[in-house]
Length: 250
Image (cartoon, rainbow, N blue to C red; front, side, top):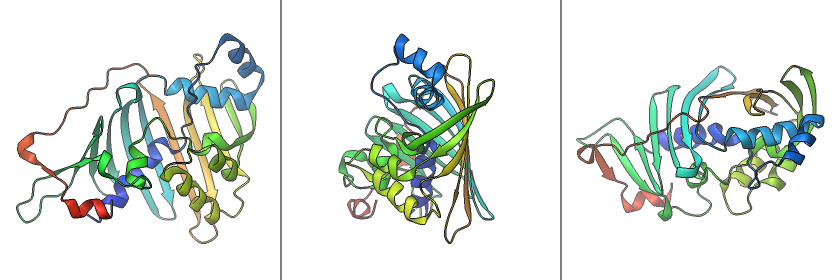
């Protein structure tokens, strides 16, 4: 199970790393501004994408390795389910403050482990990954953007500005700072995005050239806006609570 924790953290972080949210709903005035300002169009577009239920398909490539995942989210209900198919199969579910992670049963253990997020350390990357409302990620650092086609944009993001825009009390800021240190040029991360007729971001891709790990390429697609997302707890007979000692490293 310890081996799977980093996979879970990365998968969940990827699912929302590119997602910025604004607590203020876009107004008619801001929508007009978005039409003239590509940076605003993307930032507000991501907020619209996450204003209700959404399905995300994402992949992250680091050299020869690739992680692929699909997630269904209901931010308002604090409900999420995510599955990965590579580099290994994994499933995680979130219902309120209860997180469930499916692992291979070993030694007679049950396949699902239940984690109480309220027991995790404030700086826990796993806890921050499940915090759907506080994620800012790359979108918070977008500094330039231009429209290159109908609904298509490209530009650059500044990881250091993304750090400043991230919540101060959580692992996302630490994660962005670590990524910025790895990047060859953290102030100029190229990205591409598409926005639909409803003003919602439907795809986002970006590449971070690192000093030692090669290129980190992230691609995200968002769809299924407004579709019902139902997340159920695994059967009680297949679930066990995380042991107290597990919380020391989660």
